[in-house]
Length: 232
Image (tube, rainbow, N blue to C red; front, side, top):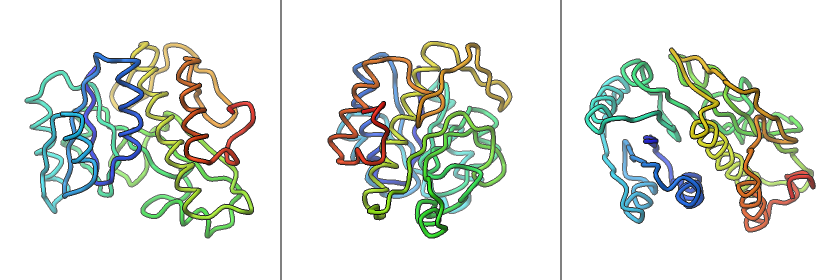
């Protein structure tokens, strides 16, 4: 499987995902597209991944250039987005584009979603993976992750828990695509098998070894308080 990563961020969630993915699905290929100098470009260099930057202010031009480049690469299955801009029809009409947004959509669309959640007084925060369409942080939801906002939480450790959410969602979707029980058709989600939901991830990972790695990642990042004892 070949996955394009479209990012304008530091790339920490992809970095962690890639280090896990290469051990479970070594045949997978990843392409990195950015629109500005950002940390994920160094991640691409460290892993010797194909990478290109299109410094275009116009979203349509960026989307068209990205689409054209991906077509030249051949056999791209989907795009993962960690992107602070909108992509437009020329791209999401050609490839399934999956956005990883740091809120439980449809709540807290747009920028600074975690800050919005904390400021609003809600009791849970999370992340959503959804197919991209023409509207902001809209489109069919594929998977979500959530954690409670505990009384001692601050934006830094909530960010760390959100990082775990996004890594796990990347793994959940990749696992489902690799095992061919999730497909995309005309911007619709089709589950060929009914997915299993977990305590904080819906759907959940199937592979027990992947679950162990997520457990280790939670411990390493010192965010155990945000996750159920059933996960730990």
